[in-house]
Length: 444
Image (cartoon, rainbow, N blue to C red; front, side):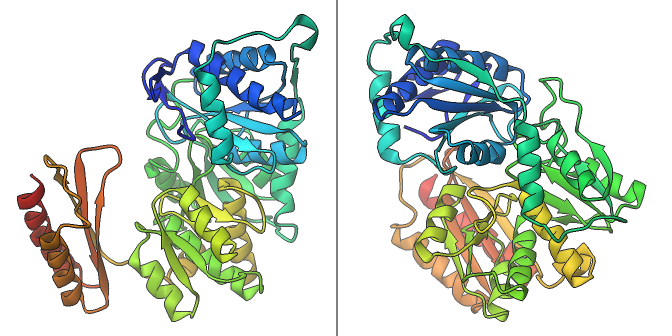
């Protein structure tokens, strides 16, 4: 069973053979309720982003949990990391997020948090899946669950975000916030305003259909323009559910997740709270690895995906990691990726260093990168094909330790992504094309 269940208008998509309809979501709520009720647990929180189908799925989940005899605490629109925090701090037995993250409004999805604000164990997910195959039964009237609204959810989360940077003072800072018409549309402006900043907010008028539409962390052009237009100190952009962040410096240049992770790591080390090394992914820019190496900070790469970054952090007992997309983990502050908390960490670095965002990011120089998608018509494992691997080794040898090659089958398309990265952009582009031709001859 996947940790996320995506669909379109609530009807397209599947987990195994289960179509994602309101009926399926109600059954999913019931199945989860049955599993937690058997463990003697009785309270699950439900939060959502701002897309229109959230109303429908929220009601369906509530009905399923009620039928299973489990109480539902309704949070309303709330960033995904806020739901994780409230699940933990309100001592709920689990949290459910209704969101499709950075996707368009017509997609939606569901994922779960455990009682401690982390992803559910696989064993619990498998138990939920087992109940999906059983007929749905309703608890007796005296055993039905109840639903209740948590009216101070936003205020609690706002105070939590501020508590992660108690020394931070933003008076005199002009900041553009782009909330993607998503779940941070009330939270982020309140956090930064209460810390003293002058806020210019865009993407704060959700209508159920405009979430992530040409705005937010995945489409930062409006944010860049607004920073230049208003002569702001910087801009901060979130995605629809608030677990990703990108920033724009005072020159209007994008500061992506790799650069933000570098800034966070350097600041954490200066405050003696780094606690080890840094975890990136296979897609993290080589410039991040080289910059950290220069500073004698350990760096490891995980598979693409926040759950794999988290696994590596736990294995190494480290605190800081993230992805180029801006999904950043600061485990000494919170239990999951949190766009607002990560942005506050950057603001703390600016305050302590006395430097601008442009100056701080300049410590890391991004390497040129060329990626070519090669259509795959044959079921060939590129990691085991000797010809492809020999060609990749030849390219890495020519890069002479100042570059790398990544061959990665897409998880969503019938293509292999051929990526070459290095300090010499002309050489990188040339070698990427040569390697892609070799891969194409074999897999197409």
